[in-house]
Picture 1 (cartoon, rainbow, N blue to C red):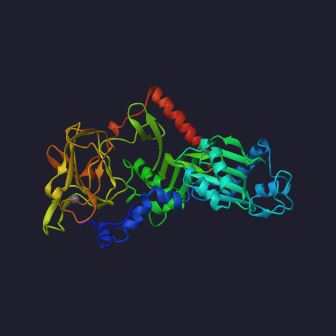
Picture 2 (tube, rainbow, N blue to C red):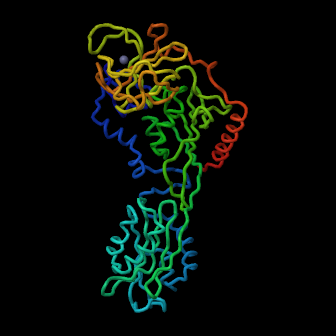
Picture 3 (tube, rainbow, N blue to C red):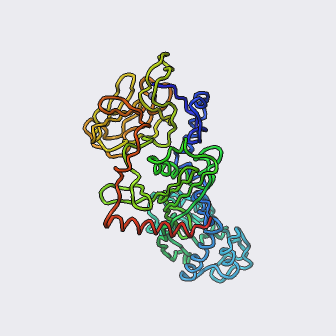
Length: 480
Ligand SMILES: [Zn+2]
């Protein structure tokens, strides 16, 4: 029920007043949010890590680093599979200088006198593309089919494949495929070496995957936490997790300033070349401002799922969440104001958080859904009744989360819906209310209830401290 235009440049930026926000347009919103939320884009365009041991972009062909590891392993495999290429041709392969002249064909390359040995790297969406790619690279149909058949048992369908081909061009039916190395991102796959009879010796490659903890530190710039995190090298899918970790303790929109520092540690699977596999997972988040400093560790408890804990094993969860929406900015506080739509002074009975459509809304505390439906000017409204009798209201939602209906039990921090602009609303935002004994009260006036904070104890605390120490050890070894 409010005037909320959303400017992505101000989103997550510090100390912006509601007046600033109202001035700004929303045209650039779509593109910005896409860049924030789309993991596919992130993979293709964002450096995954800025540490000294930078993980190469998975979409690119092999980098210098992976080449080294690749060559080492390939050299071994090549030896093991009775190398066909000899002398300078092998050296050329190992240094990957591209097409080179083989001064003289070796004894093993019959009928190839004076030809060039060519090496090519191609990326394939799956093993089904292998025959076509080989033929396109100049390999004879006979070799292409024989090689693909030999490789097929070692390449699961549906996963991306990098193929490196060594071809001796020429011949009526096409070139000879001397070597093929086809691998998935996890390093598994196969090496083929062509024998004189045209059959292929097969050397399977097993997956080579390890987990590592990456550590990044950065400083808040003059624009926003988001831009600061990206320039520090944080993959942007981790940014909402970082914001979420601090949702009880900080409002990142209003409580951070240029010069404040943050640190993250995240878990990442990497292949033998150090390239990232799959999505990273945030393990540690630290934020230090002029006012306060907080370091949080992610820990999985037996009963309560994954949560964030301080170094002593105290959960961040307590009372009502300060910001029951992901990465939002307060645009209108509780109190009397001139209503932008109705044009008279009226009590604004809640807090408005501006955020893009689709931004997750969280249950502010454990409770049971009392109402979840469209309701006039409220738009899509959820009423959540908490165990102490209080209720929280979430207005103008775009959609309810799956399974959210009257009677559903939810836990604090659970996604209950998405930000929208349904009902009487002038822009995407969450209007959030707290009702105590039937009265609406200012959500920001509710004191943080330290007493309600749970602390791990017993075996859970022991397990937590072990995990905390593991993360801290990795942080101490962080190079930047
Ligand atoms: Zn409102």
